[in-house]
Length: 434
Image 1 (spheres, rainbow, N blue to C red):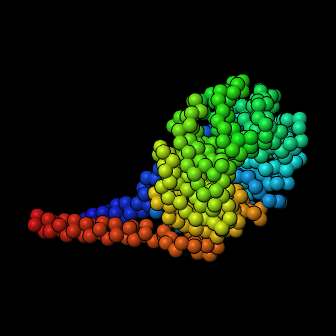
Image 2 (image 1 turned 180 degrees about the horizontal axis):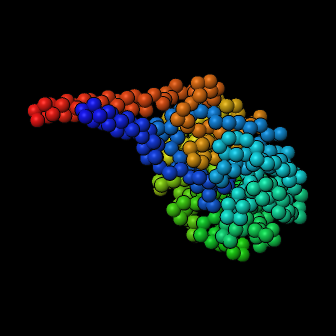
Image 3 (image 1 turned 180 degrees about the vertical axis):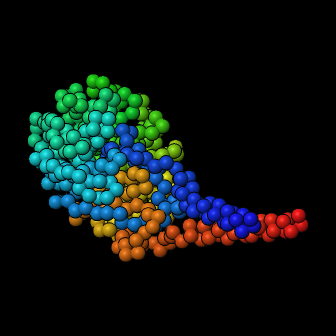
């Protein structure tokens, strides 16, 4: 009886120990499953709840890479297991997010410089191209549902965004801003701009915001395209982000701006070291943005004060960062960097080639980004990293290892065994006394 009792207690202890990694993993903050547009959401905030420093998930490894037929100049988008991106030659790819394997590819007939847009509700992918065309594809198989054209040969560099009623909003190099219905008909067109529109629009409430190369940040009604207000600065390639009733964007007058989203009133602006092409990532009381001086800047969202800056040069930093939990994810000409949000120090730095032109997307603990050679790459945390993994080259040297979990589990195991032995000794003594 004594032996059976001890064996039962040991079995319970071992079961408890084996469940510890699962309990730790399950305690993480739920990650965003979707990144359907250039900046991840209609408001262009550029944020993810993925925790890339979760100790229960081990080392960050290269999960997969996929080579396109030509260069990739726009951010990939992802919904569930579908990662969709386009190469310059006009080929649109759908890659399995977990395995990195090709599900389908199709060529839309012209160069593609903008990120695709995924409408999960309608199972649709929208692609704007270099001939002024827009194509709707079926997300499942890539079949063409419809094609539409602006009627001009001017390219569309503006990554489309999804608004109320499933409408698709984007600007064009023909100087016009468009709203399309999901069936491929024109809802309205705004003709008041006097130059290219490069930015991806942000949508908040019943309003859409975009910057133009004529130097105006404009706010239109999503219903009929009526101009509600405009704000004049200089050339604006930085896509605006709306958060907390405010609009945040950079300009080629070397200043970063914050405006009232309802009225367009100026709240503050901060002078940085050079022109600002990058789009901001905005959350809570801070924002992070790249600058053409090669620095990544963190600003206080209430007054624009610079909290820290990090040199990621040489060269311009035109890619747009993503705030992911307590880290900033950014691409540069040296590859990929993970930066501590609180102080701007580098947590990890990975040499993956020149990635300065394409911003990352972050979903469900994965970072998906591309480089100048036409490779789409995915890194993620892995509980059991392969011993022959040839993944990221860690340039920082303070890697978090899965050994922490092993040590923790071993310590718990020792404690449990000691408790079991004490209990067994007490049990034997009680049996003798009886």
